[in-house]
Image (cartoon, rainbow, N blue to C red; front, side):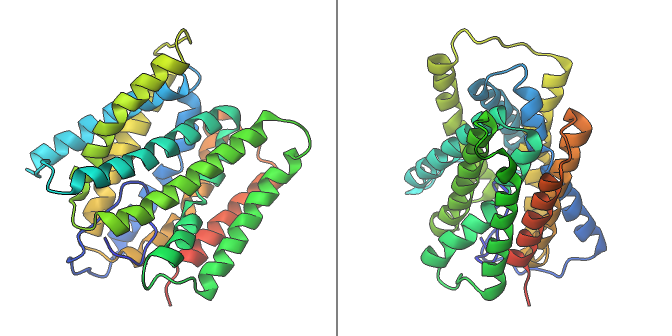
Length: 308
């Protein structure tokens, strides 16, 4: 994995690939993927209307595993583990499970638009962790400024609800913690599994996580109503098929040939598209604090990822 980028969930590329300069179509595709990633939190919110958090995670990643696993077999990617990989994958899977628990539970307690903003702080946690653990990934002036700008956006977003005793504040905090776990997972991936194929990586940590979601569902969500409606089916297909499947596979294919540092900056569009999705699909109110917060987080992503 290149050590000079902050990437969306599950991305990993071979460290020996010579990157090409991205052209117009690749830039447009990357921007489209960033736009699609913004729909993740709104789709989770829709799915939570019919499924409890752990059940939703289980069914989502079953779909994602089918998509990525099927494509891996089609591409004849070896899915067998090599010596020393299992312990690394258990560590990554643990971080992944904690991230999804916080994301789904937090999104249940807050709005989809706020969840989108708070989960997209993960590049700033990535930059902070990488500063201490990855050689050559020191915090520069633009990165530090980006972190300050982004967390200013987080504060502006949550400030109107402070002191009102609303459950949305707890949801905000949980999603923010999820962003922290996601940033940590990116850095741990860079440190531990640079040689593992990205398809094998995702297939295994999805496979290892599924029994955990099933057990948590039986222990914590027994008796909670579940039903498959048209809306929740569409939400599951979006989360599992589009996000965990298509977006991951397309982004990985892009990174196999093109410079990640020139493309990841486009993911400033993700929190903005998430707010738009939340408004269009769920009718979330577009308050001034929400819009300013989304813009500041997007600006922070741009500053953290920009290269001179």
